[in-house]
Length: 124
Image (cartoon, rainbow, N blue to C red):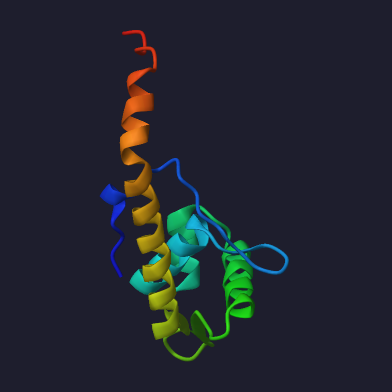
């Protein structure tokens, strides 16, 4: 799972809304990507500067919001358990990132024109 950072306008925030909250947004997408990379909710949380408890809550919210599990966890054992992003979760993030990239491309020319109108930052 690779992010296409160059295609994404950083100021653009897409959120897929569920019944009571955002089912998917940029933070949850990043959490899923980091879980896929590390195989661990706690390691992903550390990388994001987030508490394990908050990351676990987000994983639970993701799994409750979608028809299929996004992240599966394994408890304990000799190697301490872990987490893995399901095939469905991988596809979900890929589709979300593709939507971000398409939206960013759609507004790129407008952003360039608008940015050209900004005052220059004073030199230090």
